[in-house]
Image (cartoon, rainbow, N blue to C red; front, side):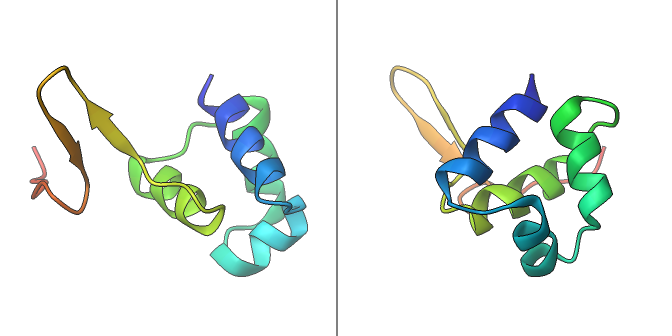
Length: 76
């Protein structure tokens, strides 16, 4: 599912895989594998791709909204 979302964001951002590869320093074949679901990206990679495509990762509830900039994440 995340692969389809990454592909959607890339296309909506008017980027080819090769373009996204250049601006993220992620190999094009890796981006392709993310988009097809062959491998799963980390949250940091998802966030990086989203940002370069003009999106922000955000979690919302009825009463609250958070994103990686407003919440300090700690490794578990």
